[in-house]
Image 1: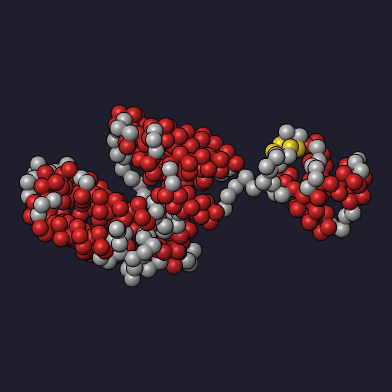
Image 2: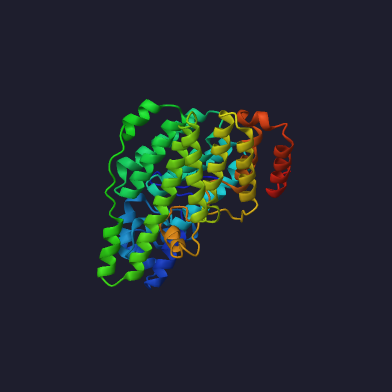
Length: 379
């Protein structure tokens, strides 16, 4: 398709003719009125509306003034994507990454990034997408570098605190996953500081203003996040105690109590599955295959309770959290990877991880794997 230029500006994909004609008619202006205002012929205006030609770049400010609209609106250009559109694009690209080559999909992603390079929520989501699928790339290191570039653009140009914090964490994740611990510590700092949470004061302020429901929601959101943080940190801490059997076992006992108490398998099954897998790996390092097999069985039992689409959500206790998640989480409650890739990894983590090789000949383990494959509907 031949590209039509407007003073060097690429018009392909824009909707100038449609927007111009509609707005002119809304205001009751004739083609002659427009022509007289900007100093051209009526025939030239007619050609604009037919898409046969476009106005000179220098006429755009005058046309925008006459039609009482911005130049972006006149051209039909939207520099910012809506949140729903970003989520839609993320899902579409994720599905394609599961089915097509990384490089093919990346070319389309980069084309979108060029068009919306100042839409920082979109930049963060594409950085996250790359982070979740970089293993499919022929050159993962170049993908890591691209993620960092996107994150640094957001940090440098966006004035949104939460977007900047997210970009910082995505950048840090790249450093960790690419095996650069010293750079990570330089980037995030070497120590954990005391957290002066403002959540309770925010909730109390809402209550003082008479919005008790809002106060309850804020406190639920706080509990929800800290609960997941507690579980995640406890699991990671547990793995550093493999050489201390007593402490390792106590960590597992406490984590299992939290999972049961807060119905974690239902509200965030990813956390539960990660725990069972790491606990099993820890047991294998301790040469305790029977205990590891118990964790494998717990993992399978949790998978039997999976519902699709997979998502984090509330329950009878966290009864206000779903709306908060939809409003605050950039992807809503959807998973950051496509369903088929997640299912494959849920099986491969057991069958392809060398730490579980000693279990491969165990009859109970083999039966669980067969059942797991069936439950996940994998061929």
